[in-house]
Image (cartoon, rainbow, N blue to C red; front, side):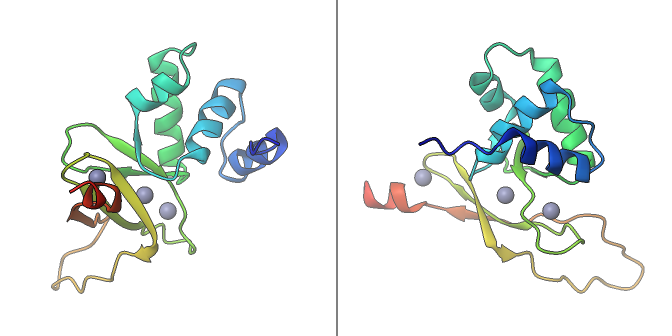
Length: 142
Ligand SMILES: [Zn+2]
Ligand SMILES: [Zn+2]
Ligand SMILES: [Zn+2]
C-alpha cells in the first residue's frame, strides 16, 4: 500500500486555486502536500533531485500567491513554507513552533493565530505567530 494522493485529486486542488496543473507544478505540489512540517526550497530540491531549483522556486511562488502555501519566517535565515490548512477563507494561518535545539519548525495547525486588536489606523495584511522552545523529540533526549 502506498499513501500517495492520486494524481487527479492533486490536479483538482491546483485547478481550484487557479493554478494550471503542469507536470512540474504537480510534482512540486505532490511533495509539498505530503509535508506535515515547514520546508524550505533546499528541502524540496533534495526531494526532487531531477528538477532545477528555479522551476521549484517558481512553483512555490505561485502556490504562495494562490494561497496553497503559507510563507514562514522562523528566524533561520531560510524562507520556509507550509501547506495551507486554513478552515476559513481568511487565510490567517496557524501557529508555528520552532525548536531551538533541532531547528525544526512545526505546524500547529489546530491553533489558529489569535485576532490582534490593532490600534486605529493600522491595517493588517498578514501576521505570523512563532513560539520558540524545545520540541517533544529534543525534550526526551535531555
Ligand atoms: Zn491559509
Ligand atoms: Zn527539536
Ligand atoms: Zn504551518
